[in-house]
Length: 579
Ligand code: FES
Ligand code: MG
Image 1 (cartoon, rainbow, N blue to C red):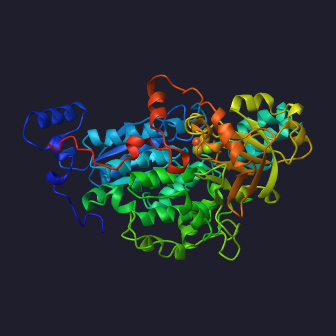
Image 2: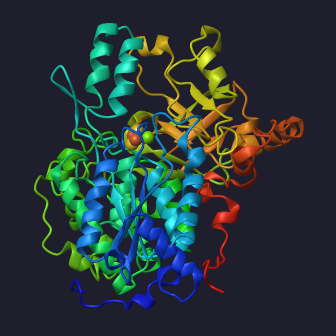
Image 3: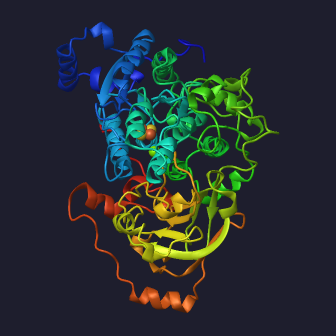
């Protein structure tokens, strides 16, 4: 559609029910908008655009969004809309404990209820730090207004003594070097200033970059939005373009449900796998799809992974580059242009009537960053789904970030009941941990963690690090940071806290991991496992009151996306003015 081609009459707008009807309530809303300082001709009859902003002083990944919202507003005004900014809660991966995953569904609820209860015709969602993207989109999908997502953008690459540093990935690496005695306090102080040098989310292909890329692949951002560095002037222009676009979408009546189709989710899965993206995307995309009424399963990920090569040479899945390089190589449009045969191109996006049109004429500018099909980073997608008696409802592994020799491995388990005891005892020589040991951490799932903290990359014991060991097989019901790496089996479902088989493993048991065979097996006889189960007592619940108690009651397991049961449930909610 060309801008301005279709205009909604004022009475066709949802906000008309607040502003334009006869009676005291509309009069009051108009009077209160005068109180806000707006003239009637500035807003009456125009689409009201809610800008949901996850800016906060505590969130370094979103700290620039306070200013950036002004660019969105600029676009909205210019297109003839009426922008209103709503501050919503911030999910700072760095600071929020025990993990922002505990609060993803809370932001989703806030998003949904704000959009529903206020006079909103269309929404612009601003976020990018890990869980913000799924939270905002889950909530918005449940309301189903025209919606544009504005990704926060990656921070600039880190620098230290001539090295280019990647968020998270290099933090873990240098922390291990310090523990191995290779660098000291002086180097660490310098690294503190070098690792993260501008606003923006992690600039590796971590969870943030993976999920904002998924949003772009779904079609809910303007083209090319997801990789623009947060502090690039192009980010302002993208924000303004999103503001221009959302007003047109309202007039066009293109709702989120027109975009978030089953085909769109299949393409988003293809995208995250072909990017070698974060394992967290598995949980989030399943949850997002659920809100859009699309059934997406772990098996879909495994099936699609076998068909899509990893083409993004971006750390940690790739060897070399960071998000800024990916951006200049063509960004997500460039990447998508390499896999058009694997995509559904006849579906609409916020900008075009079809993804085919959106990708028309797109090129890749650097074949080492975005690889051609015949020179992939890996021949198969980066994530495999495992099954077996240790994970009847599945588990995932990002095998492209693992040491190849460990992908088929049998070893003696050393089991830790929770993260704290693991931290206390992992260096204890009594445990007899060798490079062949399988480290098992439980009590770290959706309920047990709580919130599945990113504990899944269990630390290598000091004595092994000093011998040069940098990877071991690790198994947990936790998640792992998208910037982490190693042979880490994650999201084991059901989790130990609810009595999944992980609860029954004992130190000394043998475990076999076979990634090619997609299996994870506890080599213990069934009758012995039944004996252990009979002896098992469920751990105490984590919360007696408050949000945690609601969380505990409602949270679903990793394989179904960790949404709340009452939010994931199908069914309509009445619009507040619907009689
Ligand atoms: Fe915000 Fe990594 S800490 S994206
Ligand atoms: Mg992260």
